Image (cartoon, rainbow over all chains, first blue to last red):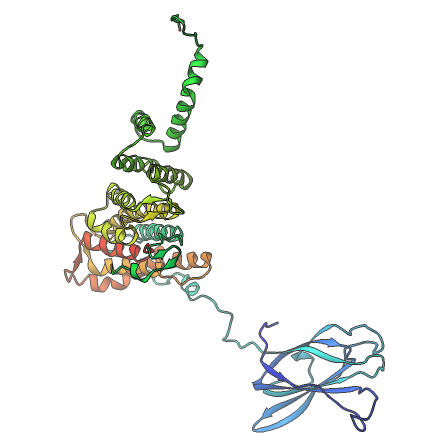
Length: 208
Length: 263
């Protein structure tokens, strides 16, 4: 599971209702949320936190050879086993590539269709939506460069006439260690050369 | 011991005599110090120890004496014996701050004494004046300034470590030079110094990561590789050599560059 999420813009949910939204007093049972991505992404995972949504449908808009196509990748995925009960109402979910009906590659927009048929709940939504891209093969976690130089060189070096590397290396190591000791003992203590009763006095700055 | 009777003087037993003079405490302190320092000449050490004790008991010791006494204390333990060394630094600091009138919030060693201490430490460590001069320029204080304990300890430790460092660099030069009487090849010296410089310049990070990376750079394999890379040039026998003093100065420069200037 990759830790990095792609940055995306999540639009506010739009309710699908029959009739006039303002005058009609019944609560909507369907919400649609669109998520636009800055650049086409191969999705590895969509993670979110549920809030009383019963069923989820996910549609993707893919950029294919210049044209944009909408495909359904998840149809009526059940988040709450019983829409009237609490079960699954606050759970965290992750939807992976292999669960999707089509390959989520080159995706530009993700549309989430939330359904809650029960009249129990005043509101329902999903929160903390994160879209995780596929990890690229070449971008691994940063391995320090010096680790790759640890493997010894295959061909034996011609050391004729050169000083013994063990002795030289041992002396260098001790010199390095002594310098480290000195640096570790450095304190921030100061003589207060430029302090005058705790503050800076320009006239005391010396030129040496 | 036969008891002596004197008119009007009470007779003391052996234990009373020893405890009244505080002799047993004195002897115990002297033996502990001896065990801590383990000198090669125990009798001479004990003689110096008691001589210093008796002169410390006098008031109005001259500054010259204070400095020499402080130096003697600092010479008792190598800086690698950290707790013993720190104790000695504390004792030396106390010695040097005696007699200084406590100004408000400015207690410390007088700058002149501190600078003189550092100079003597460097010369006792076998450093020549020219080698130690750049270091002293960074860490010594002006005569009128007052040096707090932390800075005093840091300066003393830096001088002690620097003396060891220069000794090590002399061993390194001897290892790089192919024969004791001939100077070493310049390219080899430069290759060796640059491996040390690279290890010292390891980027900041967590301490453990930094140590691992630096030690990978100065492993025998890496050193052998660095030397083998310059070998074709060295074997051309250009005659370009680097003498011991130049090598020592270059190594010293690497160390001194990392010493914080006192301000």
